[in-house]
Image (cartoon, rainbow, N blue to C red; front, side, top):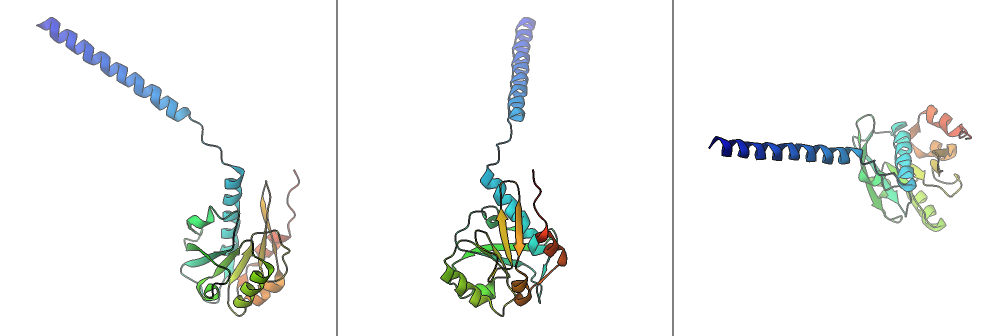
Length: 191
């Protein structure tokens, strides 16, 4: 009888040891898995999100919104990360949604507008609808930072920079901290 109990305990003990070794091996494999590399598009989207949130954090509206409403207008390349919604460093939530360029509610339902690729006519109509409303506008890039947009992003492989249209800032009704205006004047570092 003692022999049978001893043999059973030995088999159960061996199974436990085998299970423990197997768990250690699996844990080692799971820990050894490298993080999936971030694609260049994902990296750019994250960088654009950081820059946009930075710009928004240095802007002041005549009546500060409890929740900042950011509207994305037109097809964009770098808003995948931004569309998820986020919170500013100050704790203020940012609600992000997409609207058509001709949506008549843009001026009243958006505190900031992120502008993608639009035709010249669509851009003109959008900016005409924003006249007299305190709406901060950021263009994704590819165009000159002249008519309408307050900020124009320049997305590169290494960094995201931006230009500021001082005339548009003065007309917007949104106050921008001078530090942001200084940042736009910095030249990107040469590798």
